[in-house]
Image 1: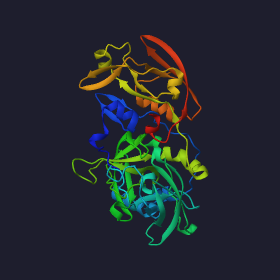
Image 2: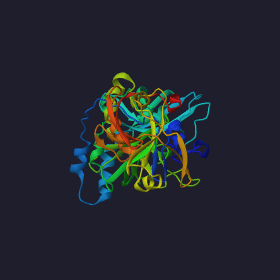
Image 3: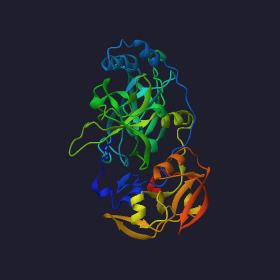
Image 4: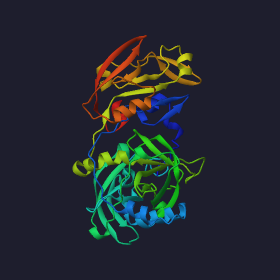
Length: 407
């Protein structure tokens, strides 16, 4: 469960960190993004499961505690305890607390959940990264089954396992829809924090559309924030709604000070992101992501006034990856450094105001548009340059495995 407090040495300035390290940096209203925070559209796996119906029929009206009990009874057997043994070495993805894994290997533990009766289990990529051997226990069983990683996507911190277990021991969970989730909705997390198997915690959806850094260095968008207690070992486990449906994969926590555990801020990768990738991961072992190749900042009305910009909203392009899709289309980056309220920004670059004719007011909207695209798709960017408007056609590329490869 990666800690969202990055080492101080990882930031030289917000925009360089965004381009090179894939981290989200929010300062003075700016949102700086790794070049190409994009996910590909994949197939959809339809999961048939009685869990949601059992939850709906099992409630007695006794309140939230009964609901949690019902969800636990019906969904608990579909949750997996995962042990991944690796040889260690060159891995640089985050450990449960935000530092690179030490050399020498060891055993990582995490959670997952069954998605079909063929033995496929979804978990986090960082749980099984670099594993030489993966073993899985299902529900409350003490029997450990061998498993193989059939597909993974470091960008969205998702992996799919194939578990060698009898069909009778496989209890798939239903997948919900992130689009229907609202702040304040009750949720339940089931997993194995600190190796304590089948632990259930409950809370609410605290916020939506958060962004977190994934193991590849790129950021994951539309993340669900929850106050349900999530700790190391919960990674890869399901975040479940009141209908007993999985709406997210518990992936990271935010801690405060020297704390290494839960302080009420956890993050789950949205199930809609996973749903789009499951079939592709099972079929091919990997997914492709579209790549725009820019780093940019969201313009606010105050900044537009302070910087004497010709528009009051949009995305000010900070950096453009040389030879990338945006560069080939003629998108221009800033070239003049300035300090705005103590932060160094780059002025003089294009201001993106529309994508495919749709007005955009911030970088998050640009991300959303490209998230729904695939490599090879074309986007029309309307940009303001020296008070003139231009329309540039960008053919999206395939994103490199890590931001460092764009340097």
